[in-house]
Image (cartoon, helix red, strand yellow):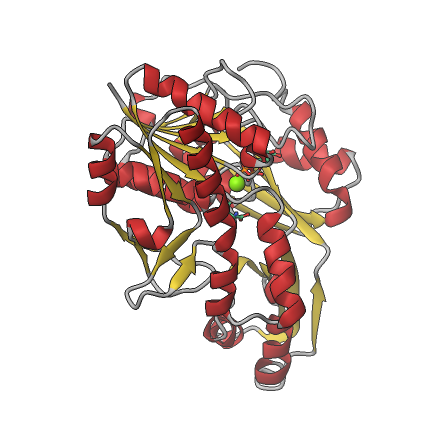
Length: 409
Ligand code: ADP
Ligand code: ASP
Ligand code: MG
């Protein structure tokens, strides 16, 4: 007998029929004698609909009230799934985040999970019930409803698995695992049998939305056995997220390509090349709570230099405002330029540690396609470039081909 946490994403609960299919799958695991905790997302499109609705009423919605609205999507699906289970004669009970007591901090719309009470879930499991929990939501110490950021149901699933010390956390979605890149962009993309936790963390943080990054962080911290599977297939092993020590690694140098259109580039031109400049520029940006991703400062010429960095596209206008109001005249910059139409394309693989020449092959491929690289950043297991957004798909396809990611390792 195993304790399994299963999470079903929005498409997987997208229609009454699909909700019944989820119930059938759950019932199948029960007949094997497993205990099940099931986390569900809102019906696909619902969270977007709620967000648009909120913005119609208040263009910049109050974060506390926005969470109250957004959290309703998942409340619908937990109830419906329990009905589908009861209809099959399976005992089940639904809980929203506050009822379980998924305690979070109070950072509305991007709250972090601090603690999970397991008592109630354990009691239900012991009584032979399936526990169905709303993803994406929690409650802060004052009792306010919070949400965990887009894609946050993954994190609910993994966090519950960690709290319950589940034997496995299964993330059911509309693809049958983690692929070498988004199969919607590259049809030749190949499913990975396994991917290391480190690689998954990079891929998620660099834009592969198949798993929310915080869910991967949780899995790493608590060593949760995590698997991504299709909710539309009855069989299939999906992709297992492994921890390098116990991993039987597929010996690929590159595991995957991630991409992200969510960033914007800002360049502060003609700033004096002297100590304190990075701080003078990024200090006010940080004070305005704007996260910075890539940063480039060129070697100075005649005591002057340019300073570029990227921010999330949602915060682009705010960042420009901060720079124009608080920084430009203060440091005597000649100009501030911005470009919101960029994207970041990244190659990820633990094999890069032991293989040289990956970067040059990547740059060569992009040059052969006539794609200009605007920024580069590297770590031990990834190389990222910033390019014009309009070349994103071309770049991803070309790199996928050059590195033969469609071929088994
Ligand atoms: P869910 O609603 O089940 O949470 P998501 O839409 O959040 O599903 O995530 C699944 C989607 O992630 C897939 O449909 C796919 O388009 C996208 N995706 C991006 N990168 C990858 C990748 N490397 N492997 C698999 N899917 C990916
Ligand atoms: N429903 C939420 C969203 O669309 C959470 C999730 O699906 O994981 O972001
Ligand atoms: Mg998701």
